[in-house]
Length: 327
Ligand code: UDP
Ligand code: MG
Image 1: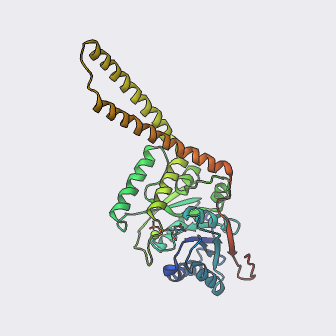
Image 2 (image 1 turned 90 degrees about the vertical axis):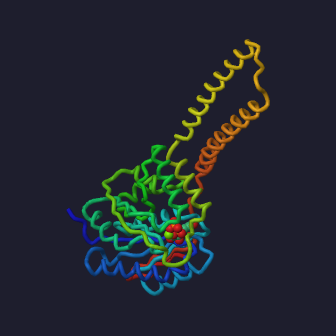
Image 3 (image 1 turned 90 degrees about the horizontal axis):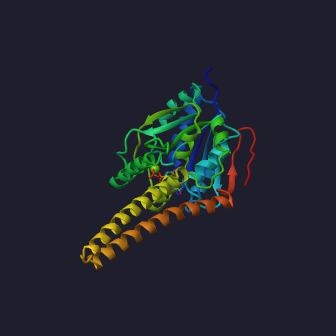
């Protein structure tokens, strides 16, 4: 049976997005209104902006938008917790009110018109719909190459990531309820959500240039997300250390036997270069292995503390008929 009268929440993470926010808010509201008028979604649908500890006037703009129109809602973190936490907070806040939630970036890079297909899949019974970009033409050479390598590595490590799917995605209330049962601190949603199963589908969309402002994903943030992605989804790097250690061990036994044979035959084994080269090699392998193990231990340490994943400072979520507001 087709799902109708869907209450849709658009969750929009924002970090220092003052340059683009007015335009994004207008474009998203226009799309929401068109969907309401077409009878595809309920008029209780909303756009929920998450202010991820912005240092500019992002929260002020969100606050003013919520004053102007009750279809806009806002949630503000106490500091910058990162894109993944912002999305999660938005989805969890929307869960009790919405039938379905779509997460979309604030910079209008992801084609909002793909929403029609997202909703069609949902209304035909899908619990999760993944947005997959058609190409990476808008990315620079560095981002394109590193992203390509990352997805290949994730597949080698046995993670079920969907290539070129970032966080443009629809989730039903049922899927969000299931997601709320995952309590891990190290979040990598695009790896975690595909492991949840459910009836799902893929929608392909075009990526545009950023409307205004610059990418908020610094190299450091990208690296952290990649390491979090690998360590929270796979323990295969630890198994690789065991294999590497075993191979080095076999090689050193061979080398040892060959040295003994040479020595027994009266040959002098060449000294300095081989000693330094092998010490450097073994030292490098040992440090790398310790680093990888350390990364997992660090993650266990953070998980064991069970600290909150984010702290909400203010929330504005008004229904048209009331003016409930928490601040
Ligand atoms: N973002 C966020 N917190 C951060 C970094 C980014 O909420 O610490 C938001 C940002 O405002 C945007 C989305 O995440 O809505 C994606 O970021 P961006 O467009 O800068 O990344 P890119 O498209 O360059 O990968
Ligand atoms: Mg972007």
